[in-house]
Image (cartoon, rainbow, N blue to C red):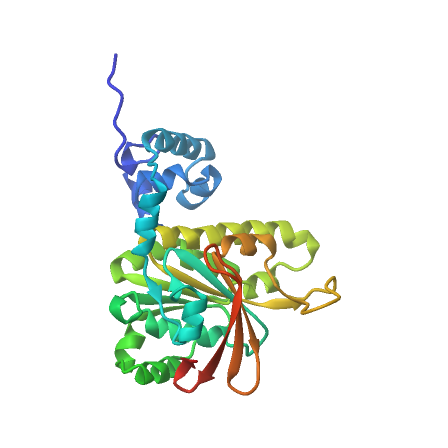
Amino acid sequence: MPKEKTIKELEDLPGIGPTTAEKLRSLGYDNIEKIATAAPHELAEISGMKVDAAKQAVDAAKQATTLEYKTGSEISDKRKLLGKITTGSKNLDELLGGGVEANAITEAYGKFASGKTQLGFQLTVNAQKPVEHGGLGGTVMFVDTEGTFRPDRIEQIAKAEGADPKAVLDNVFVVRATTTDQQILSIERADKLVKDSNVKLIVVDSLMSLFRSEFLGRGALGERQQKLNSHIHKLQKLADNHDLAVYITNQVMDNPGILFGDPTTPVGGNIVAHAATTRLYMRKSKEEKRIVRLVDSPNMPEGEAVIKITPDGIKD
């Protein structure tokens, strides 16, 4: 009776030869666990495999993967080691339990000029600081879907933080996405960049802009939400696999169903609501002041912080 083959590498999986394995690795599927958690149709589409062959590969990867169970105490110990990026405001850091967390997606939604992008710029600078100074000691990937990335603003904030503006900009990898396909692809292919360049923060500004303009009408809603769901899960996977932070900005609409109180509602529906670990609602106040409300967090109570957007960045 032939001895059962041990599956350790991608090439050991049925239907995956050296060429396909290389293609999968370049797309971020570089170990058995990632194949085990992939959807066969998705795997077939990106690799050029037949769906049946992809299903066999996924099934074999699942059988070869062992599940690891951890106690609550072990998870608690790991969480204590998780990095956080300071926002520049002590009040806002306090509201977030220390800053914007690694291994998680933080979403900020609000109307135009509410400060969402400015917070993204501040985090882009602060993420590069050493851990002991409120950073994650890494580089930043910035996915710009609205043409909002401003190098001069990054330089201004970097100077105010006492950092070398050129060095800070050299550590920011900007992708200008003009279609949802480009936006999705930038994240699907990010694994190599994240690993090779020590990316510790991914900013997507904004998450929904292109999805809203491309998928119009109720008929397109199903397809839009499906693509969006897959896109956000890829972001979370990157956060989990590389201990990095994800910051996304989101647009809003007025919900006519809300008769009393603030009718401002983030777009993207339940998919974005469930995927974001922490949700912030930002709104404009007088002059430089902005009010940031913590709407949803797994470990912090709801509350508000008042911040100022100054030429030097975000302050109390």
